Length: 466
Image 1 (tube, rainbow, N blue to C red):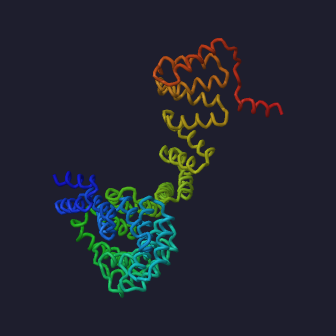
Image 2: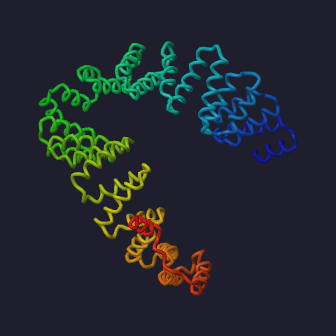
Image 3: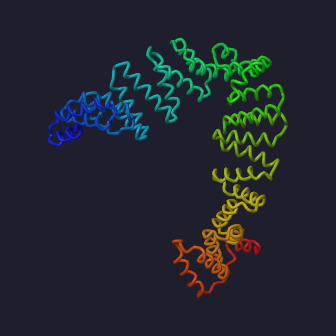
């Protein structure tokens, strides 16, 4: 009855009464967004903008992507508070993934406030937006401006340190986190981040002083060449950490530095079970194989390592080095064909698809790629050869049969074209091209056609004459 009464008051333009009824409903269910939205709307109608702002802000607490709430808040503050207006407009642009517009809005918000707390809030969001859009140096500048204030959140220090790491400035990252400690921040998260950076910077002794993590302590011992102490700790903690990937990576490191490469590989395999597709897996394997003088597997794993990290060109070079040592690994050949094609080097890619078809005559993908390439350069004879091989592997593939018929028609090989068009008609009765091809067959039957040699054959004969 309550909702019906509220709606009836609203329909009758008895807005004050409707508002009071919706307030009662809101008390009964504070999380009903539809009721909160009606409260916001009626507050706007009655020019109670402060109340409306409170209701629309409450909607955002439950649904931070609610565009209506942002738009209403922008309307409320458009003339009364330009700082809040630009903040909400920036938030709306974030939701809409218009990041450059959002950045401009937050910059305008900064220009429209003299309050330190508001300015810092806007600057933090602005820095985050720069970081999100890959503008690391601008993000660093904004985070640095925040560090001069007492209420700077710990997250700002952590984000700034992470940005310095991305820019390969480990010393600056350490300085920022040490500054955070002086600022009074000593959370486990901050200390462990600092410890990891100290290790990366070659100061494992300093990391040991601040870390509370047992596995990080073992890492420090290994880095400080305290191998036996590290090994004893690994044995002590095995039951506790045997399902932890980091534990197995540390065991691998121990066996690596003690030159027990077979055991090191076993530990890397265990690490891989708990941390799939981690670049560290391939990095460790590559280093181990290097020390075993197994160049093929070393190149192979360096290739996989760089591929996961996004360094595709470096990965291709590593895989090509591996191929020079072993040219019958189907997975390697397939990977090279795909990567070369993705990088735009189609001619080189076809060499590897050809090699793949030699290694596995039943590889349909290789045959399809080769057929498509031959068609693209006008070599219809070779295209037909590959399509014929595909046909032998799957004689009911109507798409391949149709391609064969078209290719033979382009070669002006009338008997073969009609043969495969008829095969298509036998199998492809539901195909959208069925009627079109049926008419084509009838037309071809009454068309004089002399077989064409194909563009490539013509070119080769022309050169022979020369």
